[in-house]
Image (cartoon, rainbow, N blue to C red; front, side, top):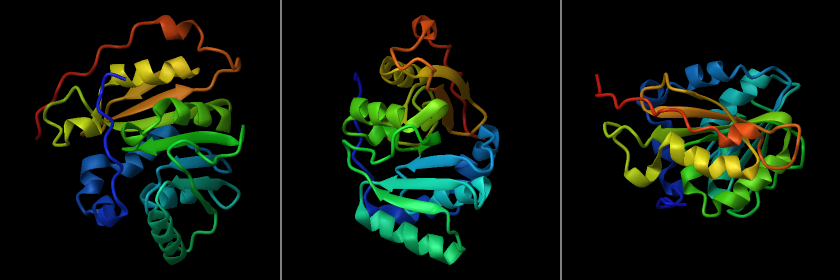
Length: 219
């Protein structure tokens, strides 16, 4: 892939996912606002961890919607269940995935969200193929990744990705690039879509990747 695949973050570091500074650093509500997720949707929070985004998603899709929250670590899913009960949320379904099987049902998902997760996938191609199958036609895959183009983002290089790298990995699996939102302090919000045809991505695939945003110094 031309990059080092990062190790999966251990469940023993789950407290970091709920750090007080995350609201300022990652602006989770603004990120979800930008995705315009409809009520009643089926959303997959892939690499959900202890449920930081799953609970927010569950409130947005409402009682008629569903959040499929997957993780490879059973300890993370136990914490997710505890956090879900504490929050009084009933529309989250935890799923134990593996690095080679998403465990998502085929053609049922409107939106797949992976926040700071894709760069840790041991088998990126296999995961993307599974996500492609899980999405409905015109369903969206959203990867939120720390900007590899930006030297000022204080994250280890293997935990950051450039937009160009993401596109080179994702588009060959049949996804069509739609947009990259660049309003967050440290992260790309990269949006792909599953096209109506299930073959290789359309002519969009041949288009050059957009110019990466310039590096920004911290405030």
